[in-house]
Length: 113
Image (cartoon, rainbow, N blue to C red; front, top):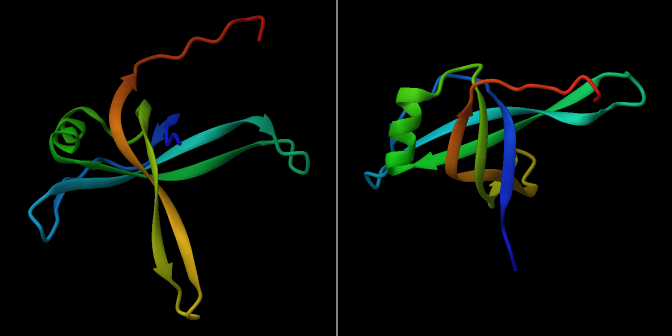
């Protein structure tokens, strides 16, 4: 089995480091990833907003170097978290645990695309 995710998108908010009850530092942010195809009904590109969590040294580095609007590439894994809704229904909320992240300074598109 293999749990591997790679995303490229824009950061939706500035990074803020938090400390969990167990003393572990973490940050939660959202990455906006535009789909590579247009929606047939709207003829627009839909965007997915993906929750991402980083831990320890990675979140401290991200706080210093990553800002709202930056385009980033990240590698990580999917994690499911059981959530009970107010209607007592249970669902699994998915999020990405980030293991590596890089700021992409510029995207260049070929004229032929």
